[in-house]
Length: 79
Image (tube, rainbow, N blue to C red; front, side):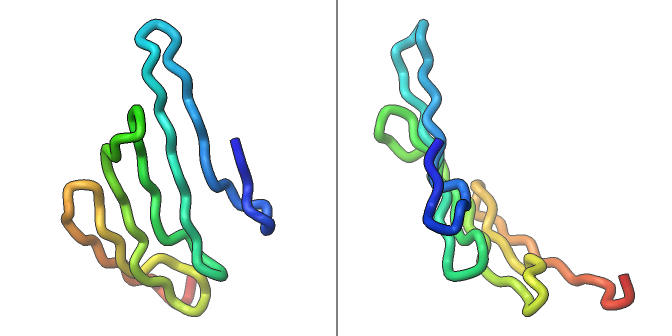
């Protein structure tokens, strides 16, 4: 595991002993929010998942999933 200066998770490395493959997950942030998660297998990117926009309260509004589809979210302001 590795962390950025704000103690947010930056990467995880998984070793596959039987197959000798290496799995690696990277987390990217802007100043306040998670922006992207990338997963690699032996240096080759398997997928990217992006978190495209957040509201001022830090709630996710739009994301692009690994299959390229997008999801949008709304929140009840009273909850």
